[in-house]
Length: 383
Image 1 (cartoon, rainbow, N blue to C red):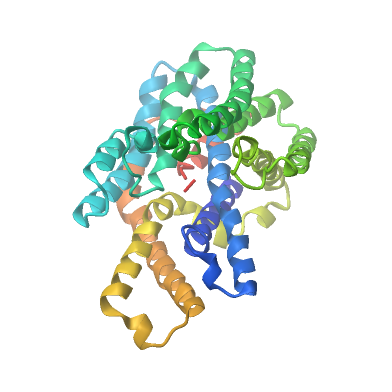
Image 2: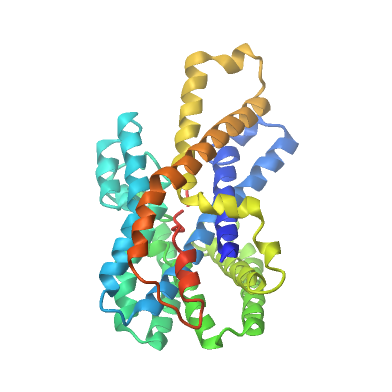
């Protein structure tokens, strides 16, 4: 399913551009037209929401395909571990060697709880790890839910999470007025960010009920986009554009998640037809294939560039203005991160992935082995 790699490619490019041009940046020093461009790059942050929706969709599909296997748990967790742990622990090793992280955050990350570190007064010294923690928590509980609960009950649970998670964000911001430490983590805690994963799970369950009916899936996709636009329109006057109030914090992600779920559905429909090449361009499938590593590593190269620039002062010697420095930093750091991620994917992570072939891949009417193969790159990834 190369169209799903293309979805990953869109998501990771959004995250990289967001970090390069908008995240933790003072926009006031730029010219008006430059600020417009930089603000546009803020949309890239929703690449993580796209990863969450995709993960909920694929993981739920895998679990439903294999729920009757005797080795259900062992197979799932071993395959996830082979895919996720090598690059993840390599990243932690780099953080330790170059002293980029605190001991407290390192321990939280080793336990896949980096997104909860603010609850304990520990600074998130390498923020991209938070979304991986959310997904690991999802992997911890969702397999049992799929195994023990009927598809109808699973649908009720997933829809409930779609409602409860924004409600938890709303309550978190209200509490944050009294407990500042809680407010800082409202967009990171697992219970506050489960709605994207739940929406992806709902899509997987609904598509199974459709029995591969592409027309129904296309209508569902446009309906999801319409719902997203409706929520965005209604919520605009309530501050949904920002997170400056409880309603905005609770609902800002919701329209994007519905729209991105609709986009996912459209890609699946087109990808299963004669125009499939449209939704699987090589550039996007390339970035999709290295998306996990690129997500983990890209900030490391930004940090390395900034350290080098400060130590050598080459930007000042070359008389570069702020706009030129911004683009030079992006070009060098992003290129280095892409090369490193490519090498990591095919020469470090791939040997671990080959171990998965020891297990037979099941097939069913919803793509079976194809859906499972498409999930081999985890959709980790909000920053």
